[in-house]
Length: 157
Image (tube, rainbow, N blue to C red):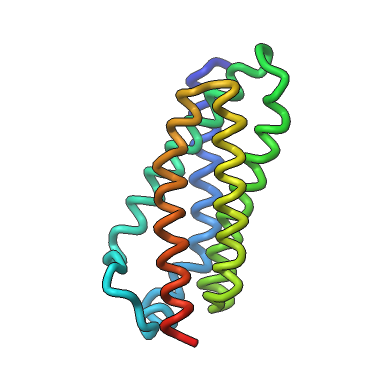
């Protein structure tokens, strides 16, 4: 499989994970989430879909770039495992926060997600600096989401 094929496959898988997470998110937005007290810096709901779509595309491209170099670096298998863990944690956050209506447990989980993203960036850096840079917007967004998650938890005891 060529580089383009790997990119298409990886982007598809990342978007599919995002779609799975949205199965918990979408029904909760007009009901449970709409009734939460949110901080003043809470973005409008319409922003989350495009932001996450872009982030999943960047994640897919990043992992494809690393996959393309599989024969060149021995760090790849661990980096791919860490990427998979962060992708799983990404989906689980939506299920915990929106599906189970639990900002507290979602906050605990997002801390682990952030650490897994950081570990992914550090491993990807050894293999493809471009791949690592493609994940910087993701960790920035998750940092903001962590602050937002914590604020929602504090405002809704």
